[in-house]
Amino acid sequence: MLTAVAMMFSWLEHLIPFDFGIPGVKLGLANIATVVTLYLFGCKMAVGVSVVRIVLSSLLFGGVVPMIYSLAGGLCSLCGMILLYRWGRLGHVGVSAVGGVLHNFGQLLAAFVVVPSLGLWSYTPVLVISGTLTGVVVGVVASVCINRLGSVIKC
Image 1 (cartoon, rainbow, N blue to C red):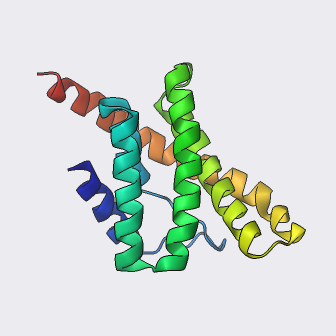
Image 2: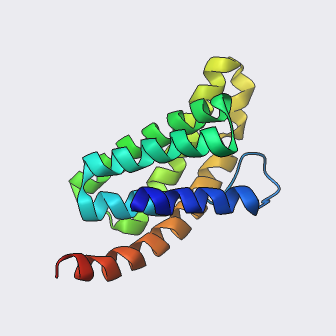
């Protein structure tokens, strides 16, 4: 069900592109489902939801090249979020914010593999700021969902 929610968010972002004036920056609403899954169902389920969502949404709304960038960002983000989740010292919003930054970093690494130019790294400050801001937004929404769904799931 959370994969379907993530797909709906991906579709929404595809239909209504949020233009921040910075190439490649978007809210990443689908990551709400990933963070919720991580906290309510664990690491394996979060990886499954994220990977299936990335593959399906790329096939439906993007293509193979965007899929490579999304997988690089998504897997980098997931690794960091899982480590911080297991560490247990950051809350939902902190884990999501770090995930947002790591997602951008993973995509930047993928771009560097394709176009090995050191000039790409000059984009890092913009991606750190945008990843943090969007990660916080995603984390706040995910936190509300986790708190509300957590009590329903335990019933």
